[in-house]
Length: 207
Image (cartoon, rainbow, N blue to C red; front, side, top):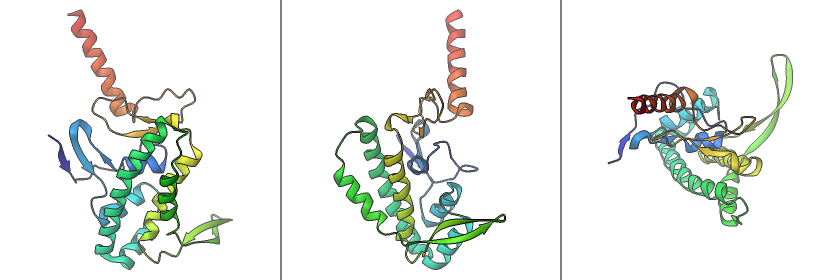
């Protein structure tokens, strides 16, 4: 039986090395116990900041400008987008050469919701050109997520998008290691549990 938990764990869950995969990991189900990190608008903004997709100032501005009801609705849309994106990325990972015209049209429709402009800003004594948003509607938030998905599809090797090999783990990650032999979302959690399980199995065989 799958249980749903909306309680947040301490600190961000960031193991994927790509914002699009962090988005897919915003729901996860260790041992069938489902955790939802973007269950409502408030939680969604917290997650966006933790995932470094926006800064705290922008999140606070959105909260004030759009209100709880609108943010709850965009969180619902984000969860729907996440389900769709997870299925598409899995197909893209297994069949990179697929046509995917319909998927591209859907993603482009979300990207068109963005209202970007470029600005010159000075940080620590140096100038840089930054992309900023007018943030006239909550649709801007979905456009940010769509942009991260587009960057994954266009810029990364699908063969390096992997699922954690840990027992009962549902997290995904982009394998950026030099030899591309990464197996676990985290060496300290799933990787360590695998080592402990293997050690115990060897001890049982000796006994």
